[in-house]
Structures are given as C-alpha cells and as structure tokens.
Length: 165
Image (cartoon, rainbow, N blue to C red; front, side):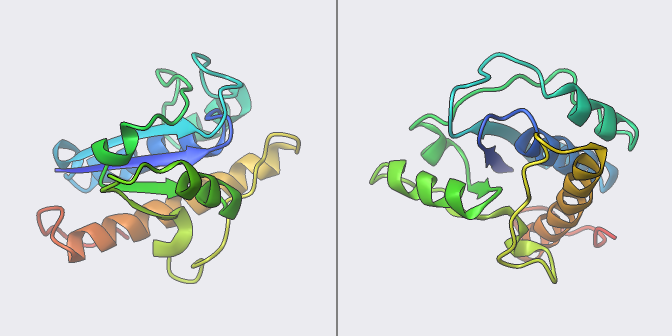
C-alpha cells in the first residue's frame, strides 16, 4: 500500500486533478487497491468546496470524475500519514518544507519530478486563465501520474505490473 498526497494552493484546481488522474490511472493498471490518494491546499481559502467547475468539466471529458472531492488544508498529521507529498510548484514545496514537523516520514518533492522530460517543472495554476490552462494541467497530471506509478512499481511500493503507458 502506498499513500500519496498532492498539494497546491487552494485544493480546487491542480491537486484535485492530480489526485483524480492518479487514481484513474492506478485503477486502469489494476493497482487501485494498493493506492491511497488525497489532495490538499497550502491555504484554507476553499475548505469544504468541490473542485472548480472548469476543473471538473475538463477532467470529466477525459473520464475522470472529481465531483466527490472536497478541498482541505494540509495538516501536520499528513507528514506522517502519507508516504509521498507532491507539490505542484516550487512555492508549495518550500512552504511544505517550512511547515513539516521534525517527525516527517513522507518524501517531499515536486509532482513532475517523476515525469520524464518534466523534472523540475511546475504545474501552472489555471485558475485565472481560459480552458486551455485546464487542459494543460490535465496533460501534465497524466504525465506526472504515469511517471509516479512507474517509479512506485520500480521501487516495489506497488506489486509489479505492466508499465503505465
């Protein structure tokens, strides 16, 4: 069993998209029972709200239903509850490192660091842009999730199955 937390600012665009896409791809690969995925925000602006309607619409068009998700803020317990905490951008990663308790057991890194060709890159915030931004976030979340699933299989955190393609 592996537990992954995806983190962005308000937990209504990028991180719920990453959570939904990761779950979707893990299920398709037969790894769903071995994965716990969640998402949270560094800020409490939207706690209790569903993902942005534009996020939900774009994800649903690709077969990923985000309607049951609700925004929450990162809490101290997340740093020991999860194996991997993945930030959508460098600012989130820096903030996570600042608030991480000394007993942190989770690996903290950028979400796209496991996506070949995207290492060190950020998932841009689509909130103030048009529909293309939400599509770009989905593309990046698919690449990041595939890379993460491949990494987890290589590290034997998941039962070995065929590569995610």
